[in-house]
Length: 178
Image 1 (cartoon, helix red, strand yellow):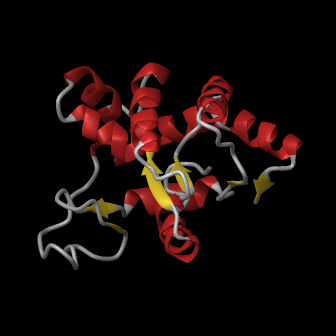
Image 2 (cartoon, helix red, strand yellow):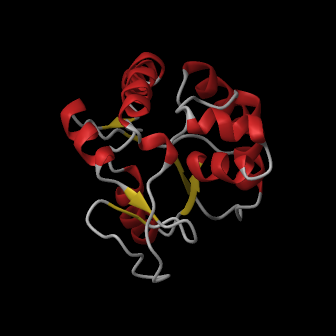
Image 3 (cartoon, rainbow, N blue to C red):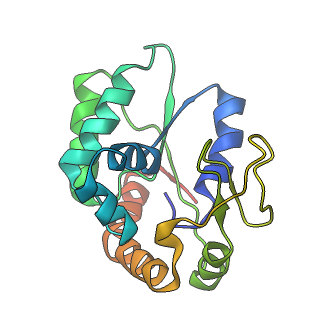
């Protein structure tokens, strides 16, 4: 868990390879859904959360495809206490559970600075605050539509309102690594 710009994608890369885990990004799922759905694209462009139904459906499909002997990392999910309840019910039904939750606690000033400089590759999704060309695809990096200053501030506020209670929940269970 972490606010937009906290470095979730960067940290996941190391964890994924070190522990041989599958990676499931709610942001990637949302962007994939947005390709064929104007309503979802509009929500993303405004920095708003997708409905639980939209995102949970995508996550469940991805989790079902993971071999039973593999673990996985959820990036950017759950974001609300309602989503915690839904994902825990789903995981219970398939014989899995949340083992640990990693929380990246980054100050608002650092988040704003990072997001104001962030670029991504529209082809492979590579993200950078220092590069302007994708090292893999060799194409120009672009700004994300939800990294505009006003939208960034709204996303951080939404995160504080909805996701900080999730941090508290996992902390109270002893499952939080900060």
